[in-house]
Amino acid sequence: MSYAKVLCVGLVGVAGHLVEVEADLAAGLPAVVISGLPDTALHEARDRVRAAVVNSGQRWPNRRITLNLLPATLPKFGSAFDLAIAAALLGGSGELPLLPLDRVVVLGELGLDGTVRPVRGVLPMVAAAARAGIERVIVPAGNAAEAAVIPGVRVRAVDTLHRLVTFVRDGAPLIEPPVGESPPIGDGPDLADVAGQELGRRALEVAAAGGHHLALLGPPGAGKTMLAERLPSILPELDDEAALEVTALHSIAGLLPPGGRLLRRPPFQAPHHTATVPSLVGGGSGLARPGAVSLAHRGVLFLDEAPEFGKGALEALRQPLEHGRVQLARTRGGTEYPALTQLVLAANPCPCAKPAGDAYCECSPLARRRYLGRLSGPLLDRIDVQVRLPAVRAAELLAGVGDRESSAVVAGRVAAARAAGAERWAGLGHQLNAQVPGPHLRRPPWRLPAPDTAELRARLDSGSLSARGFDRVLRLAWTIADLDGRSRPVRDDVLEAIQLRTGDAT
Image (tube, rainbow, N blue to C red; front, side):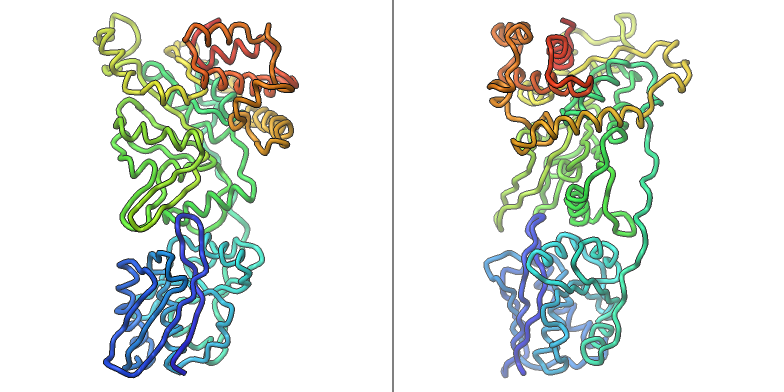
């Protein structure tokens, strides 16, 4: 037999596609040709596979070898095809009977000594195989726990090419994935640690309940970073669907913790202010990798000292915030990553970052305006909650921790508010108030009575609030009503929403 075929999976973004690895061995000058839009890592597979086959005790066929990856129009990236290529090549040379690999997806990178090394993105690859009707997969031993997360798929692992060969040829058993419960979610920062800042705590609770973006402005030491870091602690744990999405993104980025279990806690990403545009929204040569905004999918993206970020990096976030996804175009094809994240910005009022008060701050009014002006109007217009935090007073700082609400207490109210919103918007296909389109809120039956929105309409007519801001205030009002247990917002809810949006008392 001079032809053989083994199944594998290729990734484009988070979408996996079944790939047929074909091997044809013919008479002629010895050579290895790989077709099917391979990248550099795949072109180099010919040398890795040759060394791995020889060092595993197998005979290398001294013939003209053509390897084809179908569909040929789909770009192929990475080294996860190595093991499938080796199996197809040995099958085509007659060394292996490939019947045991019929309808089996084979994944893994080969070392020169024949070891099978873990690869990135195994979880979305196995999920794609399951959607295609594949029920058996073989993965590297280091990825076995991760692959076993996908239901309905029988996962087996190998640590060497020799183990795969003895399985196919002699029926020797493969490695079973480790069995164990998911590790408990550890305790993170608690909201009870934050001294004072009742307005900031309320803003954080409203943002969590409705999925709203948040901007915290205030002097150094006011608690902006502490509040932002505690936002994940009051968010609900991820359900199965969301956990699979988040875990798949971290698998592609190679950031899964040991054990490969589903990530249940909403992710928290806090890139440094020197972060570039590709590191924030995704990029890289060949297949674009997910950036911080996608790694924070279903969680929180925190930009501390936001005015210090580059203008291009901040402006690149506008489209993901509006649409909940990142679309990256490259010469070898486009990539799309989900980015349903809550953005939290924190900023000092001026560049000197000294304690509040004219006796300490050395910045002129112009310098202050220029500093905060680095956050563009169009970006801030997409931030639902914008609050100015006062400096913490000594009495608040020294008060007992037992007098402050913990994250667990606040998380209970947030979960109840989210459940109320999800039930209300189920017919529209939305779960959070922040996701509801503005036109729905301005039409019956969701339109609020004119007396309740009088102040809001006056601000829109005066130009102090944009049309986008008008809709975002309405969304905030619905979230406030959900937190307070009301079926519809009232006038006080709208006034509080205006205060949270603009930072002005009404």
